[in-house]
Length: 346
Image (cartoon, rainbow, N blue to C red; front, side, top):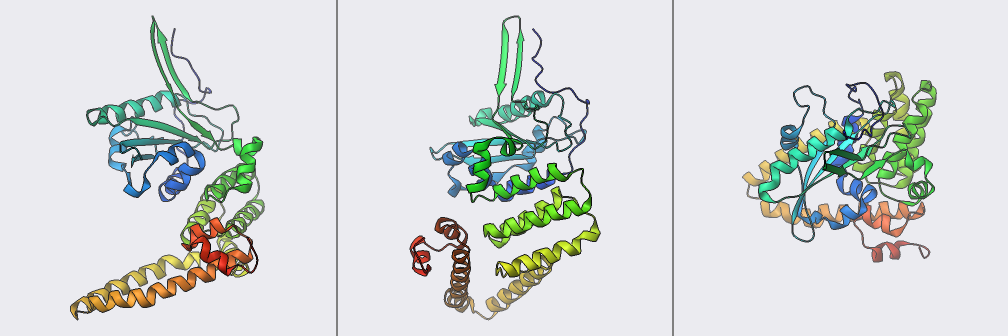
């Protein structure tokens, strides 16, 4: 019996999605949040204190399509498990927002898996593969590679996440409404992109505006908020003429939520200038033998400033009614400290 065909028929060569870099950036920058939200059992098994290694070089080596530049696998990560072992988690991200399912997807998944397995078998490091499907085709759900012939059988089944399910399944919709994980906004943005992909630019602008306001309402850190807004820009494509209006939305929303973030469009310039200033200051301090004084100053001045800033942010988040657990996660303050700041019991 020939190999079971599980994919929806389509063109032999699928066009690589322009959203691949967006998802790749999100997963790398928010890897722990990604696993906690989509694959909680895997998240619970990993010892993140030992770090995460993203293996881009190794990914290129096992890529079956490296010669033609048609990659579908975005992430290969090396992690340590709590039981002391080391595992590779191969996150193969299939992004299809145009409802054009990729033919032979699971065959290619099998090739990725086998090549990673073969590369690490001497070290006895197991490999697992996961798939995230962001297309809007309800019927496209490849999760198994199967070959049966003359008594021979080969089967590979992988866990998949279908983003569309967060719109259609009540339990997952509730998760979007109650979770404080940043992946909530990523999922909402992807779903919103499905809604407006055939709409005019005015509707797309309103969608982007709504996502930005929701993001600030969650009270994420500056870095996460910046990352989310870039993701919105990737998936809700707007012409250049709308960029100024988006900046105004960001500015107004920051003022409304009393966020003191540096404007998104100014951050990279300021960060470069700050980095140059720090490097110059450290060099001068070392030359004058003030390393000890610098350390003392950081402890008494910089740390004090950070604590003050964290408390101010926590106070604002309390006023907005955010849970103490969430406030603690993004400010670094203990639950006890936050409760002392609360005017009423939370």
